[in-house]
Structure formats: C-alpha cells, structure tokens
Length: 82
Image 1 (tube, rainbow, N blue to C red):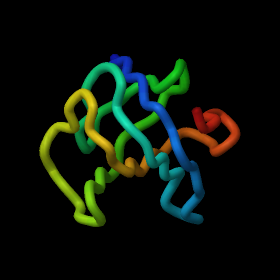
Image 2: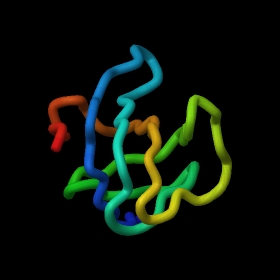
Image 3: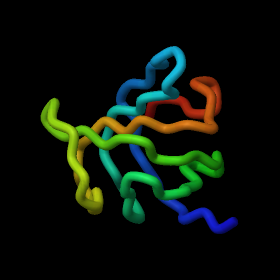
Image 4: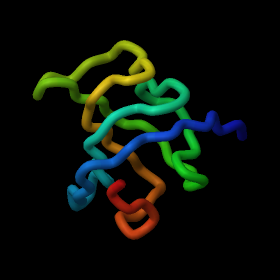
C-alpha cells in the first residue's frame, strides 16, 4: 500500500471520538485529498475530511492552504503542534 508524504504545520490537534484526529494548520509540502493515504511527519494516516473556512471541501488541498483535516489510523500523541 502506497502512502504519499505531506508536511502539515499543525496549530491545533484534537480528537473526535469514533471519527479520528483533527489537525488544524497549514499544508507546507505535498497535497492532500479525501481518501488519500498519507504519511504526515512519518505517521501513516487516511484523510477522511477536509474543511476550509468551516466548510467541507472535496477538492485537493494545495500547498499553503490553511485547513482542518480529519485523519484516521493516527493518534493525537503521534503529532505535536508546531
């Protein structure tokens, strides 16, 4: 199974029980899309939702975008803000 690398500058991280982990911040490297298998800072995860400006989006998140991303297969302790 292939995972694409991405670098995401996290400003905040929180859990949604039964859904996954939400990371809010800015995409610094790579691209993210719903359903994508990604390795964020070396941690393998699956992108379940992307939200920009409190609206769910379905397009590819591009470099420099500020967003919230819902991830599964990752734990809150796997990623730290900053």
